[in-house]
Amino acid sequence: MAASTNFEFPAEMHAFAERSVEETRKAFDNFVSAARQAVSAAETQATSARSGAKDVGEAAMRFAERNILASFEFAQKLVQARDVEEVMRLQSDFVKTQMQAFADQAKELSQTAQKMAMPAGSRH
View 1 (cartoon, rainbow, N blue to C red):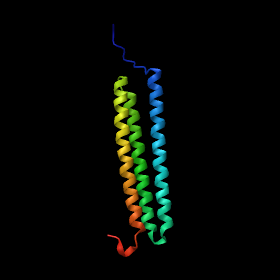
View 2 (cartoon, rainbow, N blue to C red):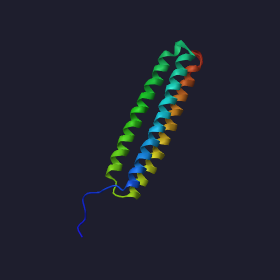
View 3 (cartoon, rainbow, N blue to C red):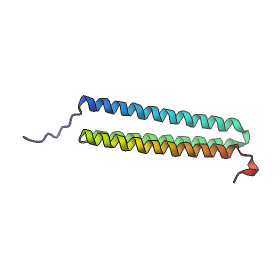
View 4 (cartoon, helix red, strand yellow):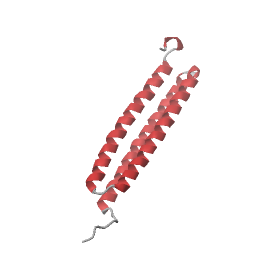
């Protein structure tokens, strides 16, 4: 029996991939919402912190770009997966990596917002 070069994903795998993309999209939407809230809060805290708010906004956009690129890389890996086990491993790795990235990004945004909230003389 000759090995087939065409790989077809079973319906369950397609459903899993769709759920994974939806979960990732929800996580990303939550991140973007949190980033927007951080930017908004930072902008309303003090007019003298405008440059800091700009920094937060730029960081949020940088994070968003990074996260979108990671999603595309994940999708590309999924397309190249050879079997369900590899898909499961890729999904698990991606979710772990993205959750850590979201946590790190949220921490950085929070720290930047806190620095902006401090009076100018007490920032170090």
